[in-house]
Length: 401
Image 1 (cartoon, helix red, strand yellow):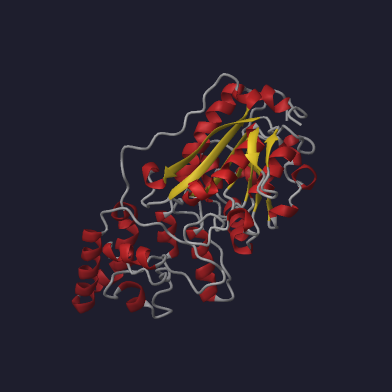
Image 2 (cartoon, helix red, strand yellow):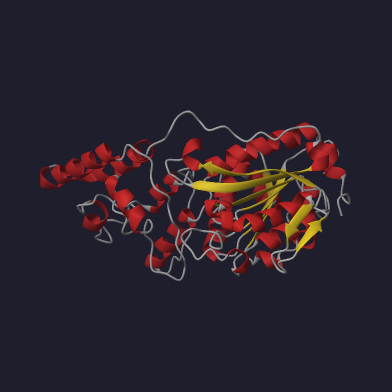
């Protein structure tokens, strides 16, 4: 990587099925590694990056690592990036370290154990910041982390990055932290529906930029879009296609299809509730808890499960279940992905040997994802700062220790 090369590189932990990776890619970042522990999500990343147009850099230079992030050693472990970096990744080289660390420790739907939850990966994320010393850091989580009960924890995260006094979450003792050489530019809650996602999905996002990179610049958070995308606008084409074979048949089945489709069109001109991915420990796929199911019902969507894809409906004899129940149609995995902001062409892998589990695994990847349009908006704001700083800041390998 020569001195004039200012490719915006990134590494993402807890990458899931690629929601954040897609958005950051659209913002101009090129991934050196995507780390994800779930086998199905990692397979989704490999499948799409393996053949999607525009992902040629990642096909050549990005390691997709299916493993626990606690075992991730970026300075010694990466292989494919060697061709781009012309050697091992060194401290200070990376443009952006990003991650949607697991939300259960802070989710309103869980027990909100915070630091006492074994799934809390904030400490590992901060250790990786120390190891990599990237130009910028982006951390995504649920809105619940902004609750008052987690104020001490947030103060500790900020102190680890930019210095200051905070209570150590392990000892409970207040002390001064030196910091890692960053300016925390905010820990803001962004609403996905403000960025073209047809869903109410507030996410808490922390952005920190290295002080030598930020300089006198000011990081500008992205502004909401003026237009709102509704469920009807997002799914109108695909929903019409699902009913069209029955409309074409005419007769009683055609009349039934028209009635259900017209009802859906009338009621779906609104924003969807938050999609919920669910836990591997509990049941199959559905669109969320009781309140969410009721909200989907107001949109004439049956939220009690996920529909088979259109080419599977007749083979699995699921027409009545998927399309003609009184509450309305169930969403397919592909339609849920559109509600989450994924591009329509993004495919999701599941367990091919167990069809039910395959669909459930696919839907959970969608439901747990970070909406790509939100990641893109924040990524573009970060990229603006990094590009303005120029490539020289990538050469500061040892500063900030």
